[in-house]
Structure formats: structure tokens, C-alpha cells
Image 1 (cartoon, rainbow, N blue to C red):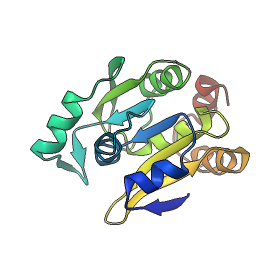
Image 2 (image 1 turned 90 degrees about the vertical axis):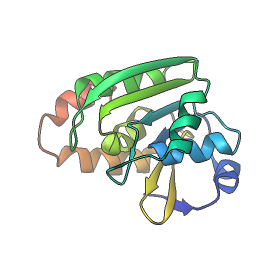
Image 3 (image 1 turned 120 degrees about the horizontal axis):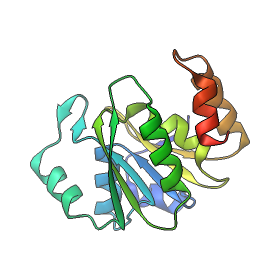
Image 4 (image 1 turned 45 degrees about the horizontal axis):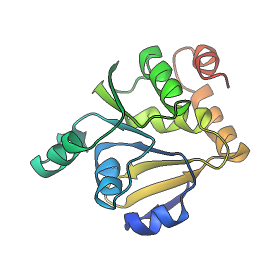
Length: 162
């Protein structure tokens, strides 16, 4: 959905604000580049394996204003995750959402919930970090994908005010 970066500094030079990071490795690389995302979603896993010790320690040491644990099973977007994400994006405080389950699909609702000009960054396994600049076109793409998913997309759109 956007350009792929392998260098966090280069990505950050192109990123708007706020930055929403989806995934442990993306969050780790942004923190290592000296940038605390406005919102970060992590689940202590990468490519379905536990993150290594240095990544876990860096995430544990990161200083977010708020931390919240949310339930979100694999291949799912729960109301708990959506409400927490929407609230975090609307906050002036940096927020770490620690996902019990999987955060992989959260980039799509993040694109819907974030303001114009914001950046949503997610990992592309084996390639790097994808930077999505939020605008009407990105929102339309995310909405189209979400509308095709099983479940209750209308409820999702309602929670996000989209």
C-alpha cells in the first residue's frame, strides 16, 4: 500500500505525523532510530516466531506515555483492538498497544482512523517497512479491503467513525 523502506531514518524523513507503527520489528527499528511512534502495536512475535531478546528488551525499555493490553486473536479485528486503536490515535499521548494474539491486520483500521497526513508503518516480511501516508485514496483502499472481510465491517466502520 506504500513504498518499502529498509532504513528507518530514510522512512522517518518522509513520514508525516502522527506515526502509527504496526508490528514489533517496525516499532523496534523506529525506536532504534530515536523516534517513539505516537501509537505502536506489538505482540512479541515476528513472522509467527517470538521476537529475539534484544527486540523484546528494547520494546520493554521504550517510554510510552500509556500502555494498554488488548485481546485480538489471529486473523481477527476485535472491538477491543479497534476501540483502543481509535482512542490512541486521537490522544496526545504516545501509546503502546500490547496485543494478546496478533496485530497484523491493524494497519488497515489504523489507516481509516488516522488523520490526513499521518503515517501508518507496517512490516513486509523479508523486505522492510511499508510507509502509508494517510489520505482519502489510502482510506478508500483500506475500507475496500475491510468491507470484503468476514465479520461485521459496518460495526468496524462505526467504531472508527469511518
